[in-house]
Length: 158
Image 1 (cartoon, one colour):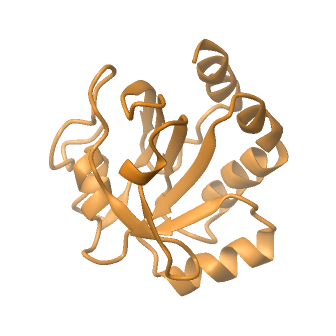
Image 2: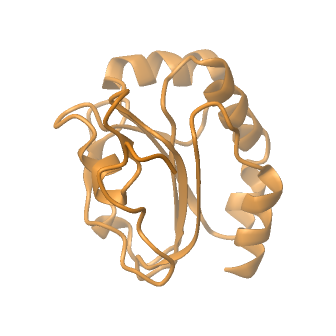
């Protein structure tokens, strides 16, 4: 992680922050409201960027891994809702894309993955159990993609 982080990322065994974000149609999605089933929260810096698109296309093409584990996939970006909707439609993402646009980066800050210098989220992924407790996480700097193998290992361990 970089020194630009406001706080350290949420740790393993800690409760995930209580955040509510809007999806690509403006519908609020609350982590508290999703309790009872595991959730993967994946932060990305920019919609339509090469690395982010590549990562999410890989997740899209491997969504059955998440579904088999009963895990709901949520992708969070500081981009506006309408940008995320256009991106999801263009790429055929069948999972939720959530906007952390306003208050800008509030969810990324709560998870400890907001880069103050760029005003974007770092590449942070968090796997929450059914009680909202972080069971796995990884945080990569911008430009460094996350490994699908790491997701698969975390899902298998859940």
